Image (spheres, rainbow, N blue to C red):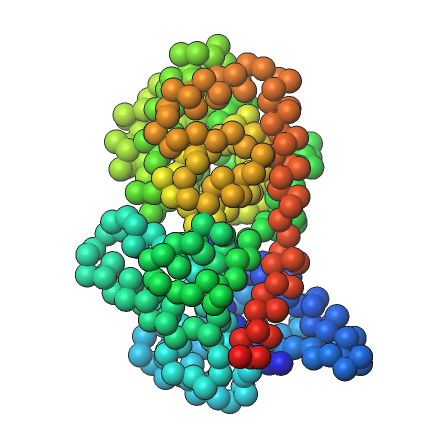
Length: 377
């Protein structure tokens, strides 16, 4: 089985993380498949289509066939070149890790849907949003199989796009254990202080370019209330692009929170941030999966999150959940965690236990099974 994978989506977004980690987990399965092949079972090969200026890191030398494709992901030229390259590579199945899939290739196509935010929230320019929604609909209709990163997203796909449930497979994301783990090293706290001015105790919140769903304003309201209920004079660390904070009034509106803005963080520094944080607060209005939630739990960080979207599904019993607008309830819990070391440790342990349920190896195995099913049909 020869699998084509559109790795041009690799970048510093959640989709980019999905591309990189899934491919790294799939590579070892190729050698396992080769051993199984001696027993009469089929193995597989990977051909990844990537931007030569932005190759996927961490893949061993000759483990995959790298097919350069510099044309834009949304461009007509990119579609034409992709169709020809798929023919040359003699693919059995093609995997698009985002809704923008090749429209006319001869092999079956598998598409991953991470969320249906454009159907549920205003995301910006109305014309662009209309085109994006059209792209989702085309992908849902033309894909042989659809992978949803959570059961909640699968339900949205079936309800909004009218896709038969038998065509949808739920395969959860995971985190890189190279970075996101609970093992502290002696220099990490000093490194956070030196690079970003971060000092314990501190609480972490996230900003994003799609700030409408992240509910950062409520998170900052929670921490404002928590400061009145806790004697701990904590810092509030905001990582990610500044769009969310600007939409919430900008830094001047929250001076009492002792804000530290880090901007985008590489995975190693984000993991360090979570390992030493007292709390990660994520009151999103909607998440298709909620990767930051799992990243924080995998680092042993106590988490307060919302009961919206897929977050309860991912959090399980590893985090405390509230209505995303219940600022009083979240503030009370945040204050207790800042003041009660025993309770804080209990929630750190519960977070680690829940995070252990997710694995990229398991996700890769289940994804290969979807490929087989697409070809079998």
